Image 1 (spheres, helix red, strand yellow):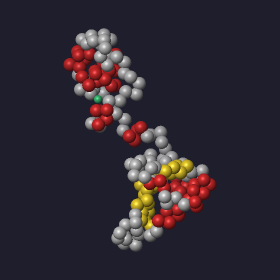
Image 2 (image 1 turned 60 degrees about the vertical axis):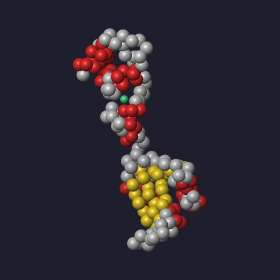
Image 3 (image 1 turned 90 degrees about the vertical axis):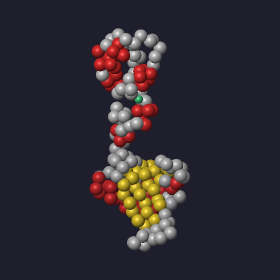
Length: 177
Ligand SMILES: [Zn+2]
């Protein structure tokens, strides 16, 4: 740390960026850099740009970068539920199911899996899931994001979502989110 502070103190180059200093100080956490600036008023480090993020720190998972969960903290439980349909599988499960639906709570990443014999059961599964959430959490999911363009979303399911004021969006086929 002492070396870092000396480095800060004796720098007199006016055109060096904040990012340069962050890298030169071996990716020192910006909060520590800021503290050092307060101690050494003659340090010539430019002020930290608003929302400064270092891509290398993100890649190496440095602790000063807010975790994804922190970034999404403002998103509350059941604000968004991802809905994924998988199947049909060539071999049925023990319960003769050929499909399954995963429902992922975006804020908490809690995942529910429901097995089905036919794709057409998806509507009922989603309806039941909503009732279950209402009963357990006293909250109706605010939005569903259906995977692969939601080809399994029936008119019945659309009507149900509308009656419950649930927003239903679709992710494009084969995109990761
Ligand atoms: Zn960095």
